[in-house]
Image 1 (cartoon, rainbow, N blue to C red):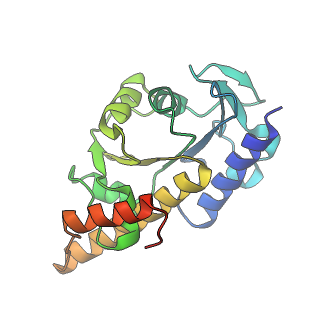
Image 2 (cartoon, rainbow, N blue to C red):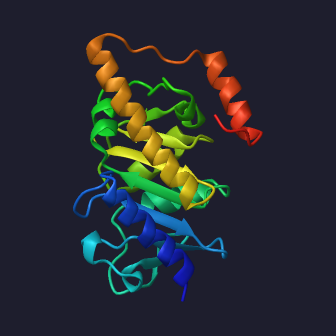
Length: 211
């Protein structure tokens, strides 16, 4: 059962591995099914390069393990808490991206420096909390509020979307944003887009106009 959302999860985690957003068994992906109470999520401790559709775990909105040969990700509480709080969120991507992790350690909001990045800001930082804990899940929900992305201090990023494509785009652009921010700050050239420009770009995106 649930083959479609399992395949979406598998395709996304393999893409994330291919482009270097995740390594080993770090990071996790979830997709909500047509039944809002059903979520497909990457399993715990299964190498992504050997993962198959049947390995993907199914949980309900409360995080209870329903189907799959392997335990769901240890970060299931974070994924399910966000989906309980946000009916608009249909997919989540959590990575330990190198640049996102570096920039999260500053504790400062991550700001956009190019138009495509503006879609996902403001990006706030969740204080460090033990991975897999209910406290982390609560902190992610409260810091995320109605936005798309948060950084996790010493832990990477957590991105949401209306579908898995949106969530993956958020993860890709957030890692790019963090990389540009880090190097430009080292060079002393960082120049964030003004708030009014960001608002205008977000309005263009909301109107389905490319940036």
